[in-house]
Amino acid sequence: MATRKYDQRLRADAAEQTRRRILDAVYQRLREEPAEPVSVERIAAMAQVSRSTVYLVFGSRAGLFDALGDDLRRRGGFDRPADGEADARRGLLHSIRASVPLFAEHRPVLRALYSMAALDPQAVGGVVERMGSDRAAGLAWHAERLAKQDVLAPGITAAEATHLLWAVTGFEFFDQLYTGRGLPADEVADLMVTAAERLVLQRY
Amino acid sequence: MATRKYDQRLRADAAEQTRRRILDAVYQRLREEPAEPVSVERIAAMAQVSRSTVYLVFGSRAGLFDALGDDLRRRGGFDRPADGEADARRGLLHSIRASVPLFAEHRPVLRALYSMAALDPQAVGGVVERMGSDRAAGLAWHAERLAKQDVLAPGITAAEATHLLWAVTGFEFFDQLYTGRGLPADEVADLMVTAAERLVLQRY
DNA sequence: TCCATCGAAAGACACCCTGTCCGATGAAAG
DNA sequence: CTTTCATCGGACAGGGTGTCTTTCGATGGA
Image (cartoon, rainbow over all chains, first blue to last red):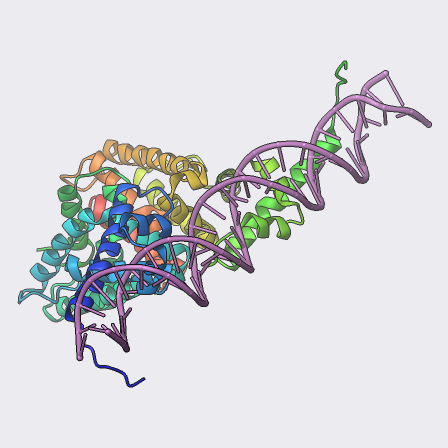
């Protein structure tokens, strides 16, 4: 059986579309009934795909959520590199403000991913950890830059600033205000920016 | 069949002990393997009790976790009423500092309860909501008192202070620093107190 | 002492979900 | 016309939940 070479443009395209349909189904499912347990069966039905296809494409339930997280990261723009802002203070505050609409838009899905990861890190295959270390690296970079430009509050080290910024700029903090207190996204953005300013920046 | 009256001191005691053993088993289970899914079956085995007994005593899986939360609330001292501190500022900061050891001690269990509630409020039968509204009421009381004693930062209303305190004194904030950043409990306590001071209190 | 009562055990049952596997189908690619 | 591959459809074992019914055994009233 001499293997025959295949070009498979159309077939690969179709496979990619199937993958998309499934990811969209999980996303929609989490958005529509965030409070219900999610079964692979239901997702497959929503994507008009057989359950075994989900396992074929993503390997496992965990792989599915992992892929969803990565998809969100890419499409949502969470991985946007530092924008060309030379001023450290403005750069930080701008990036905080920019993250809030993303948190708000994808809130049910993010909430589910984070909570699933907290209960069982395996269950989401590591996306949340990856998102976390990216974020931590970004914040450390911001903190360093603030230190270099000498705009950190007196008596605060870059490391302390990173800790506080971590706590005060993340999805969890956002959601405490957005869902926990029922505030609109723009007010939450104001509070998050204010918090970052008062906690780590020099008063001016 | 004329019903006979029963006094049942010993029997009620035994029942109470059974209840305790089961609650202790869930607690221990969450503490020992926080990352594994929790089955009623396993808990029953740990408590040396039949699975049906768990359902008999707590009604449902949700009832079990609900009871665990209430138990924690009572035994942990989360419901401690305002201590006799006349100074609003000191009262607030003291109560923040007091909560941190409790968060740290019960962290795996609290983490599980909060995450389960986030994924499905039904699944823990409302304890988390109850804990939340108690806490919200307490913070509102603190904020009012701070306003009356005129020690709120200029330009901040009691409502805004409540929002910020909510975000910055809760278990989620604690855990962002404790687990998320790997800081020891006493450093987290310092950071939480500092955060509360800088975000809502007048500089002195 | 006798026995009604009630906490608890034990096990059966229906149901749902996960993972895995395998044979069948049908369209694209050669 | 034939190979290849994505996908389907269904079967299967395993494990979990909730519910119910039967039985056991110790307590404590009479």
